[in-house]
Image (cartoon, rainbow, N blue to C red; front, side):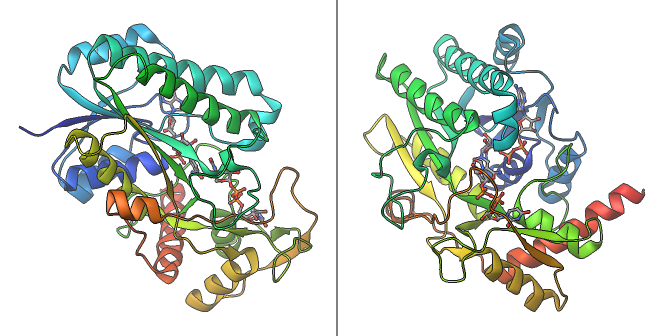
Length: 344
Ligand code: NAD
Ligand code: WQD
């Protein structure tokens, strides 16, 4: 019988790509999402790609009664992948209580559900923000977790601590925390991609919106960082590669491999690219000019971070393999698809 995985936030950006990879790998997928930052049509996109429509339950994970009802209805959940969260760093500074409430109450509720319904395995969406500006690059999982620069980042740190404390109560539970670097791109089919309810805030969708004419220009936030061209350096990881890492994590947990109850993995390419390098790659691949101007630094940004992802390679057998040129094309095709959707 196929194993059932509960994917919270599964109609969202990373969750939907992961649902596709899980189904392709032979898992049954149950998505729980309240659609606060995603759309119900995503389910149709997943069905078109895989031939299978995942089970779907629409509710807020902060509602314990609804979560209990969901776990009662689908009795045999083998593992949870917990994507559901609010994720805008800047917004978390202006609305800290909403962020703490949404991200932490949902986390507590899921841990209670694991306890009460004997769900043994959890994969958690964490972030490279836990490292702040690391002293040593590339950053390994051994690097110290630094005081969070935002309430959002703090919810990731606190969640990891809550998971560790919960696992210490019983031998039966296991968890993997995946610290993503900068997820980018969309599915090659252009049937799913990042389609948030509000305007996107990250570099790549802002570049594609500028290219398609939705924005007049891109602001490059600072060219006075201590990097070769002065602009910020990040590790951009293709969302489908990232999704495959979740399947590897689920395989490890449900296959009973490994001995540690709680493992942490960095998910990145290992290569840092500057904002200007990203712009140049878009220009080269698409043969179009990106209209940009240099602006002041964005408050809260760090200069440079990229991953040492060798632990994920060694232990999970996972590696980011998609060339940046393909990622650029997938982002562009997705932006064109969004334009078509908004015209329809
Ligand atoms: P997303 O906003 O596209 O997806 C999150 C989904 O969770 C949305 O569909 C939203 O409707 C749902 N959701 C939020 N709160 C909920 C609640 N209380 N109950 C039910 N559903 C709820 O975000 P994403 O980019 O796919 O991110 C997924 C996870 O990865 C998040 O935990 C995020 O913090 C983490 N992460 C994202 C990035 C990134 O740059 N995208 C980087 C590092 C970590
Ligand atoms: C990338 C680079 C910007 C927009 C965020 C969160 C982080 C994680 C991933 C969740 C930076 C520059 C951007 C623009 C620009 N999410 N930039 N002009 O800030 O690295 O990470 O998403 O966990 O927590 O903070 O991603 O895409 O916003 O920025 O010059 O209009 O692009 O300064 O150097 P970031 P980003």
